[in-house]
Image 1 (cartoon, rainbow, N blue to C red):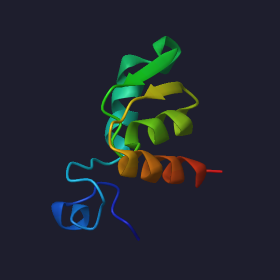
Image 2: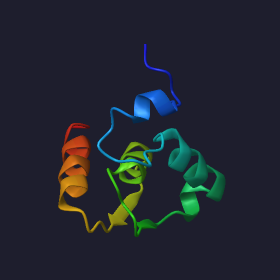
Image 3: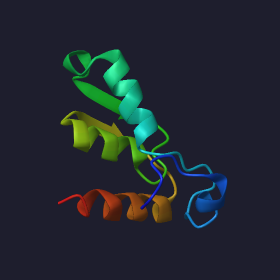
Length: 82
């Protein structure tokens, strides 16, 4: 079983140095209020944790990332959601 909050040891296996768990943006979006969340903007998208949280919650998301490797990895993670 995967722990819901990733540890620093698990992050070493990630392709991005500042990975955070999907649960973090999920909690922030819920705290703000999903009814109020028409569109989430993530200007530092990284590997897509915020976009995944948005997809799980049914909220639209736009993200920007300058590193093509991170962007490819984020797209792969998002596509894997089905």
